[in-house]
Length: 317
Ligand code: MN
Ligand code: MN
Image (cartoon, rainbow, N blue to C red; front, side, top):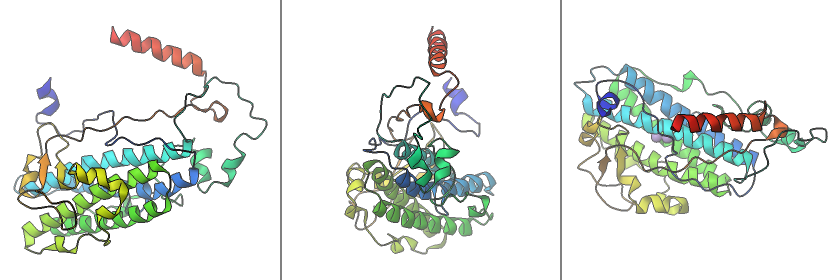
């Protein structure tokens, strides 16, 4: 079985966890969810980092001859897909409010405008069309699109673009962080600031290996150290700022040629950079409670839950 999963195929492996444990929101705040959308569908958001690295890795020329650089872009692609999932969960959690065991039985009274407040939220479509979920749009509801992807076939140019992209992502994250009070959104920003710093550092080191230019000396850009952000502390203490993951059971180990033999950035806790096989331990995905009067998940909830339970039991036998 292990061979079927790990050998000789280009594919993705999905694990049903978030990359970190997110604290539940303290209150429902759809406008905070809208702010967090910038980190998903904004120009420098996770859809952009994912799209750039994914297509660059697919299109990469001379993969075998440039293995460490191909592996770098390929492995970070997988991490970015996990970031898309993390931010999306953060958005939906903020839009929906604290974890709850609310009654999900159907038949709520819809005649008294139960969602009157929703007409005044900034991204009204996130409720009206999306049922309080995340969408690939920015904080103003503008669609993310292909124009945010650069894949030129020129390795230096693409790596330089990626360095710029990670610095841009850091800019987004700092500003969104400064706008949020709820722990859920702040945790998303804190973790992603640490990971974005790793990615900017990694692309800088890749460019240095190829050209000799010490681009990492520009970091951090923007110029605020992670140590000034409370939500970054536990990730710094566990060394997440020094770690790059292969996100693969057996591939992309050549990362060590780029992310190795160097130290963490000045200003961050000192230590050697390390490549970790596989992925972070991760955290649970919070449940999004059904909203009967908004017709989600609808049809016949109790019947659906019962059918699902029976199928689940049968599958376990
Ligand atoms: Mn990211
Ligand atoms: Mn990144």
